[in-house]
Length: 166
Image (cartoon, rainbow, N blue to C red; front, side):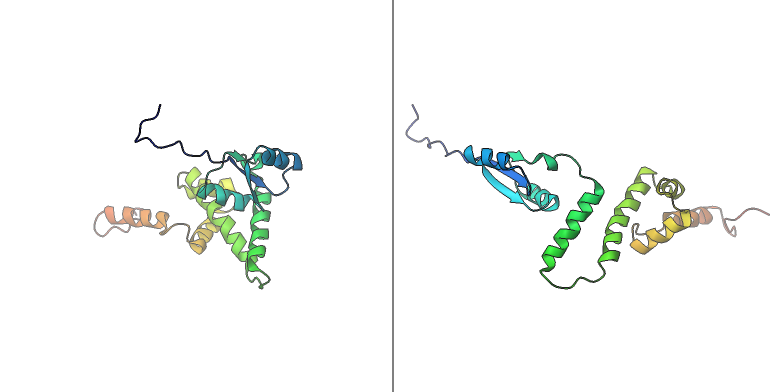
C-alpha cells in the first residue's frame, strides 16, 4: 500500500511512431488501432531531422538503412524547392555540387591519411585537380603539403634552400 507521501503513478504516454510518406495503409491502420500516435514525414531528410530532435518508439524501416545517395540528393533538392514556396532559385547547380564535393574530398583525404596522391587516386582525379578543389572549397584551412615543405626548408640550416645539393 502506497504511503501517504507517495505520488500516484504517472499516466503512461502513448507510443509514438515516425512514418515516411507512402507507408502502407495497413501499417498506419495498425498503429492507429493500437493507439500509437503517428507522425508522418514528407522525406527521409525531414524524418532524420525529427529523429535528431525527438525520440520515437517505432520508426519506419526505410530510415533504418542508408538510402542510395541519388535518392538522398533527390529528396533534399525536392525539400529545397518546397521551402522556396514559389520564390525563384538561383545557383542551385553550383550549391549542390559544392555540398556534395566538400564531404567527398574530406572523406577521401581522411581515408588516405591526408596523403593527397592516394586520395586523388581513390577519387580518380589528378593530384593537381584535387589540390585546386581543396583550395576552392576551403576543405582545409591551410595547405599541409606547402607547410611541410616550408618546415623542411627551415630546418635544413642557414643558407640552405631546401632544394637538392649541388
